Image 1: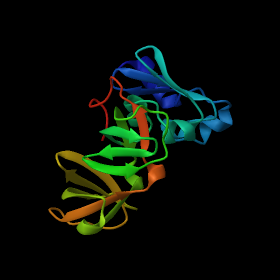
Image 2: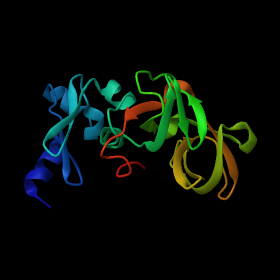
Image 3: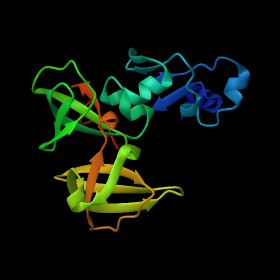
Length: 193
């Protein structure tokens, strides 16, 4: 309970995530005042810091949609971060299943980290999904359900307005532009919801 950190947290200037920090300085007092949650305050030139080094600098939507590593993906929002194999440009293998994606420039059969946001996963009938799993838990969050689906031991977080009962078998589908490929990082397996 460091009062210095508490002061800055209250001011929305310093974001604290365990022992790692990211700094955001509002451009004007008016911009600062409109943001109640400091994570929502990202402006047009923000960055994420970890252990005194810059992890990624860029526009907020670029950082959210194209994180450079698992630390950034997890810090900026909820993520499913899974291991994958980049088979070729625009084709990644996740859990033994090939998915089309929009990423290029990786080596053939390169091990990668794959980021999929929970809101970008479609919940379907088991036989209609690209991959299938079992619903482990369901939590109503007001406007959507947060559903945890076990697919071969990996717990996928899905945010959907559709309800799925615990223990139900479901299918999951992901559009190509919702799959984000990253180079393997030291953070893989550490972060992720």
